[in-house]
Length: 127
Figure 1 (cartoon, rainbow, N blue to C red):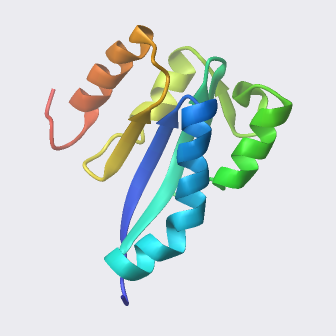
Figure 2 (figure 1 turned 30 degrees about the horizontal axis):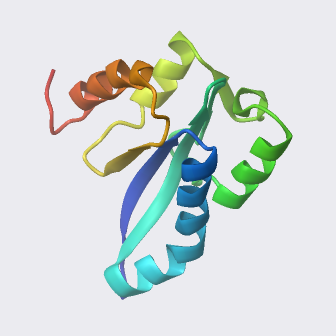
């Protein structure tokens, strides 16, 4: 396929399930782009400390590199990391949109308000 449609991906939680999602995203990237014309771009990955966020207009995050960093510490300590709080909510709000997939691997009820707020920020869901 000549052209591809960019799809932003945000993964919340990167332990067992989240790490598996990130590994599959990295491993299947070329296949999805060639076969279906979809270019999955990792825009953010979160853990209990915060998120690593790719700034607007910047290159997508490297899933393998984020996982490698996670093995050594908390994501908020990453050079592109943002700790939980208002600054994180602002960074994530900038990623909301009709072509963004949010994968919640946390099994935490505390994520629900964030997901609901995110939905209202999407241009396809006016507040």
